[in-house]
Length: 358
Image (cartoon, rainbow, N blue to C red):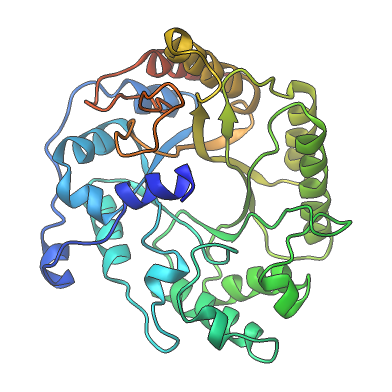
C-alpha cells in the first residue's frame, strides 16, 4: 500500500460499530482552542487553510480533532467519499461517514471539500466484474449525479477528476480504467455531469508530480496545462485546478516552470488550490530531516502560495504506523509530530504564510 493510501486509511479509516445516526448526533462542536496562528495568518493573507481527515479520526482522536478545528478553516475528506466507500455495491450508496464529516465541519464552522468523484484508484470491489464499455458511462454519470446531488449546495468544491495524467499515450492521459472504457471524453462528461447535478458547485481537476524541476515532472506539467486549456476552450465547466504538492525534500522545485504554469491558469480565471501538501523525507539523512522538511515547505509555499486560494495539507501529524524509513525511523512529513507537538515545518509554514502578499 502506498504511503498516501495508508495515511488516509488511518486518518479517515473504517468507522466505529455504532449506527451512523448515533454517530451523526454526536458530531458536536469542539471547545474553543488557543493558538490559531496558522489559520489566522492564512486568513489575513486571503488564504483558506485545510487538512485531510475523516470520520474515524474525528471520532476517535480528540486531540487531532481539536487541532483541526482550531488551526484550519477547511476540512477535506481523505477516504469517506471515494467510490469504494460511498458506493459499495452497484445499487447501494453509503453516505454515513461523509454525512458525519460534513456535520462535524459545519458544527465547527469549517468549509468542506469533496474528494474525489472519478479516480483510477479506490474503486469498489464490484467494479471490474460489473463495468464494461457498454455501461461505463452510465455507471460513471449515475455515481457522480447521486453523490453530488446528495451534497448539493454544501461543499466548497469537488475534485471531479483526480490524477488523469500518466505516460500511457502521446497526450499523457491515463488510460485505465475510464479512458479505455469511455474514451478521453470521459473527463468532459464527468465535469458536465457534476455541474448538472449541482449548478452552484465549484468543480476542480486535481493532479500530482508536476512541481519539481526534472524532465518527467516538466512533461507532466505541460500535459496537465494542455488538458486544462482544452477543457476551458471546449466550454467544460471547470472552475479550479488542484496542485497536490507531494514533494520531496532535497529535490529541486521548478520555480520558473511552476510560475509559468500558474500564471497561465490565472489568465484563464481558474482558482488554484494546493490540495494534498506534504514532504517526503525518505532521501534525507536522519540528523537533517526536520530542517530539510521545514525548508521544503517554505520553498514550495513561496512559489505556489501567492497563486493558491486554498492550501490543504495531506495529514495533520506524523503517523507511527507508516512504513519506516530505511534507517528504521518513522517518516516525518507533516507539521506536527506523532505526539502533536509543532515541528520546525510548522514555523516555516507560518513564516511563508505571513510573507505572502495579499
